[in-house]
Amino acid sequence: MEKIRFAQLSFWFGHAQGICAAAKQHPQVDLSCIWDDDPGRGKAAAEKFDVPFVGDLDEVLANKEIDAVGICSPTQQHAEHAIAAIEQRKHCLVEKPFTRTIAQAEKLIKAAELNP
Image 1 (tube, rainbow, N blue to C red):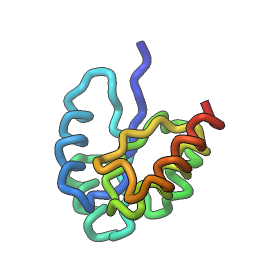
Image 2 (cartoon, rainbow, N blue to C red):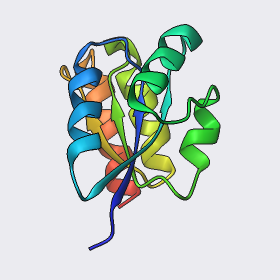
Image 3 (cartoon, rainbow, N blue to C red):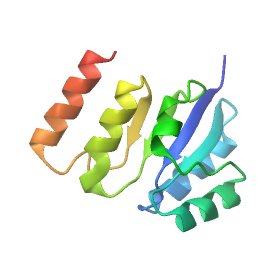
Image 4 (cartoon, rainbow, N blue to C red):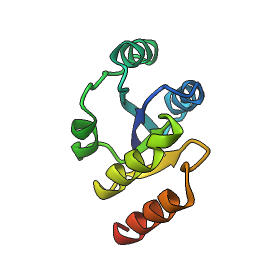
């Protein structure tokens, strides 16, 4: 089985630490890179997990070598980040809460349905 190539989006929530630690240990996951809108926080996480820091979210999402993303950004950005990832055909692991509002959740679900 091929490895899942995974990018972590944001370390705003501390849960990203555990997600990346698990990804690094799993034999079928390749933690490929880290993005964060706070470059200092992102670079520190990238150094800790020995992966590249990519400062441009669009670059991460456009990368055909990335299969899936973990989203631990602030809750109000979950829908924005997940929809952008889904539109690039990425699988998403979204930290709870899923979105901030029901309207955001409905928009995110619709994006997923349109981009199977």
